[in-house]
Amino acid sequence: FLALSVAGYAGLLWIALAPALAHRAGRPLLGATLITAGTVWGADLLALVLKMTLDRRRPYETLAEVDPLLRASVGDSLPSGHAATSFAGAIILGYLFRRALPGLLALATLVAVSRIYVGVHYPSDVLAGAALGSVVALAVVAALRFRPQTSGGRRRSEAEPPAG
Image (cartoon, rainbow, N blue to C red):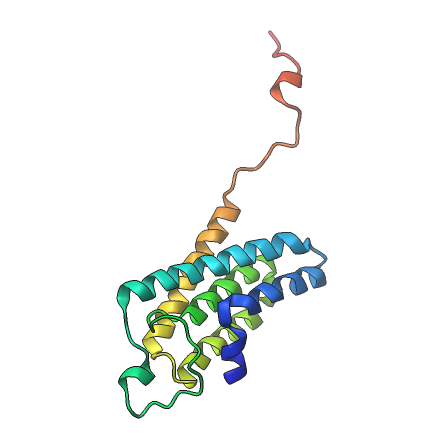
């Protein structure tokens, strides 16, 4: 769990997975990486803003019996940035590479749970982060699915004049 927690910093795990999955699928590396980075870092930025707004202290700061395995955490506790970036990364990569979705969601869940295990988040922090990351990723998916399609045909000025 400690390794998973460290691997989840700044969403870099998901950004590193994007070109690997794209290469394996024979798809453009740059596009998948840019979409993933934008999604993951968008979720991370929103999590940071919420952390500053909500100002919830971490478990090891408020509970004497909590002895964290890791203290290198940015900001306050709610929501979990690791959970937000993990679910954002898993969902956007799952959209881009559908066959990988079950494994990606399992990995996101493990990274999120690792934050509870190492003692830096409450379970509710992780659930809130997972929900935030999911919403961000689903908004990106919606934007990708419903973007205007460009026409492959001739421009109007090059088209034949209307009959009549």
